[in-house]
Image (tube, helix red, strand yellow):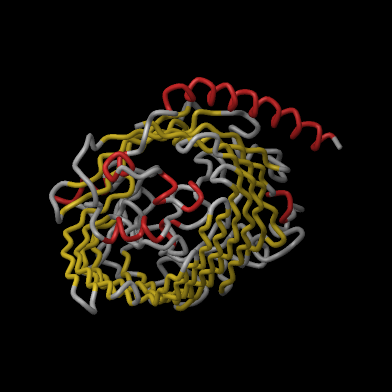
Amino acid sequence: MRHIVAVRRVLQRACIQAIAAICLLHASSLSALPIFARQTGQSCVACHAGGQFPELTPYGRMFKLNGYTFGERTVPIAVMATVDMTKTRVNHDASGNVISPKDGLPIFDAASIFLAGKITDRIGAFTQFTYSNYDHQGSDGKWIGHWASDNMDFRYVDRIIGDANDLILGTTLHNNPSVQDVWNSAPAWSYPYISSSTSTVGAPQFLPIMEGALAQQVVGAGGYVYWNRTIYAELSLYSTADGIWSFMSKGNKAGDPNHPQIYLRGQNPYWRLALTHDWGPHSVMLGTFGLNVNVYPNDVNATPIFNQGVTRYRDIGFDAQYQYLLEPNTITAQARYIRENISDPNNLVYGDSKAANLGSLRLKLSYVYQAKYGISLSFFNVTGSRDSVAYPGSADFSPATQGWTPEIFWIPVQNIRLGLQYTHFTKYLGARSNYDGLGRNASDNDTLFVYLWAAYW
């Protein structure tokens, strides 16, 4: 009962502050349009399903596949910010140590600057730089902010339209595997679309490497084709984003324990195939993708070790997406499964075996009414082989984690979203109860997350 009362009080305080922020932003944001909306003359709903950015509509996907070049060149700058609060069900470990230092406190979390849009009729770009206000704590306990590169995607595209064929031929240079993808079932743009930078719970601890570990660490170059809005195929190669490509990983560097640079050996391939079909208000995609990467280890000082071999990750994924878009209703269903096989002959990451695996399933269903009122439900399930070195926080040495995330959100104007998420864990690190051997249960990590997500152009 005390927990429920505390959550209610925190919610009331966060909602009051969020509504006040909306009021301050409302006057200017009513007439403001995002970069791409200003460039194309379309509203945000044209590109984003039910206005729920970053989820794309068929038009939004075609805009991205054509290299962000629809419309006329315009002022290519935008800003975005998030204010949020997390509340963990049990915010201390068995020794009484606090897990999430900002738990229960509304905070200004992060802000981004975007430089994006049409450069020429065939060249366009999307670049983002993000400041995290509570990035990490110094030795004196004070919080330190951090500027860093965020998602980037540069494209050169040609489109050939004939009597019976519509062929898009494109190249992409980017810094996050699948950030170039146009379906929101792929890892880089998949649900949950927003999370806290200060909470260490509220999500699975261990995921396949493709689900974020290489973001803003690599440079990827590739080509793709999209034929008759039916078949999509892509091949990209990844290497370390250093040297002339270091602007894509700005904020990460060797020897920085808070932001270490990940180093890859050689060129590492990624492939993507998708079959798509649109009819009336319906849109469906069935796809598969894969990533092979060889990763050098870092030592205790976050410095790469180049003379001990690499750990090899082989990810294969399958995904699907369905959309129904007909005003005032928007329905989106997504599914993704990634199987990762890991070869670690030098026991650089895993100590009990030279081979391991991880499996990650994510399902999401959402409904938006009048591009204003939304609800979603997501299920996640992580499985994997046991290892005492890789998963020391588990009594069973297991990464297995499972749970549900319901969310409700409100979009009062097209570039502001106010949302409430709750993540409930049915399993955490291998068990429902006493998963750490010290009495902590999976549901102790249940996390309430309230956010205000606003953009201004």
